[in-house]
Structures are given as structure tokens and as C-alpha cells.
Picture 1 (spheres, rainbow, N blue to C red):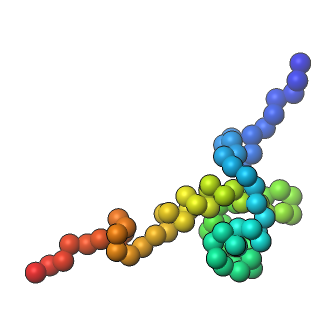
Picture 2 (tube, helix red, strand yellow):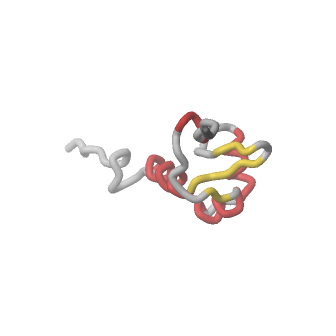
Length: 82
């Protein structure tokens, strides 16, 4: 009989490749220091592996989608009053 395995981060399965802060920074076009700061403050999705922070590409892409603003997005479209 095998021991039960624990699923990462609250019972959710990983849905993609794990990347480090450098790769996440390239994906988001921001400095790695910004990625690490946002992860420490809990503002971007990440996984803690001991002292290391890792990121899932799909999670970051989904997070970016929720941050979109401006014309053509649900947050940026308002009816103009005449």
C-alpha cells in the first residue's frame, strides 16, 4: 500500500510548468525584483517551495487577464452620456 500524496497549494493540482522569478519576469515584462516583491505580498499567484518561490505560466497568464483595463475590456467599457 502506498502512502497518500498531498496535492500542492490547498488541494489544487498543478496546471502547468513551474518557472522561477526570472522567467516569470520575462513573461510579464517586468524586473525579477518586482515579481518577487509581488509574490511576497501575495499579489500574484505563486507557490512556495521552502525558501523558493515558483510560478505557473498558466496561472500568471490568467492573472494578467484579470488585470486588463481600458477600451475593449469589460472594465474599460462604459456607456457615454449624451
